[in-house]
Image (cartoon, rainbow over all chains, first blue to last red; front, side, top):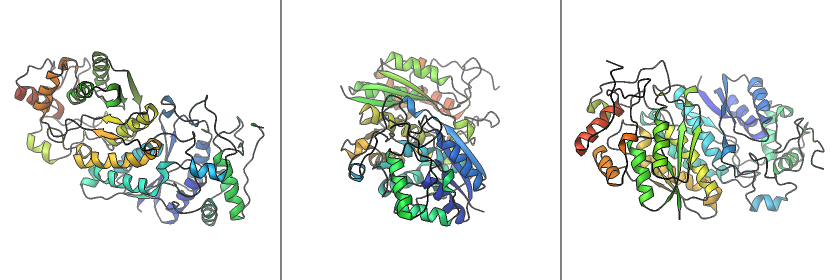
Length: 231
Length: 231
């Protein structure tokens, strides 16, 4: 069985991406990051999802992106923006953007891939229903793949690496439908950037808004528990 | 004053690279990594060098590359190869190679650069007198730069990032001569991959061999203290 590394945050996209990789017949090595995110509760979702899909191994890598600051996702003193409109989301990169996050995550995956002699890395980035992050664009992923294929001993020896982005051109509703057809239990996933201490979702951050719209458009009920923390 | 990030391991190359960046008029933000390397003593050299050159800030980022294994530099159970010949060094990638190391280091530098609004990153990689690591080649660096310029918000806003590799085409002797002319105190640097508990160099690993030859060729005395640990 061929192995693949799947970057797994515990949200809708990475969980669906995991299901797709599994459906393609890969043995899964899942990788998550404790990077100082205020929604660290997502790691519990990642663990549950990894367990549901019977991954071969799940690694949680600890890195301190909060030490650099610059993002409301890792800073206790910056506020996560709330109730942004679709126009805001498509035209402005918000302060939830974490500098170089996907590049750092994919770089760790690249290192692990080489050690596992694995040529396939999956990431659930998508370029449609997202918050305008530059490191979710197809041209970025393509450039990372090109770089990765010059970076490692494995590639020097002729083992070409592929970065798979099966969701990159799907809407959130399409992702949810795809995930459901593959047996993803979305009640286990977490999306909110700014959860209440009990893990409940705020319902107002970009991630909650995109999630809610996605389930509505897909015509699938969402079991997310929204709390009134910020009201 | 324009700022630059300099990746600083505490060896000959990164110290000379730091001196070059300083000489070019940059304000320096130095970045080192505690990554589980058996020659962690190099971080002391990095601190001393950062202090000598009056950097604006020196960050030591903790990441656990040892957890992945696959390299004698991070594994207590793999031996660092000794007394390799020049032919071995140019034709075989040794087990001191750490998967994706430069990619991970440069990715963290990319994140910090964005937070500092800094457009210049320096790395002391060189493609001549080295151990055949794929992530020291010019084509790799070029590909990383291309990727980096698609990865971040800063670049979306038009601030192009440059990865400077001033040593990439220099021999070790040329690097040492250049460093000396810029005031680098090489007695503060550390090269050995497998130092004795007292920090003394083994004299037999690739890094020691390349260092010794470099000083000889440059006609400059080397203050390195070689101990008999492995004899």
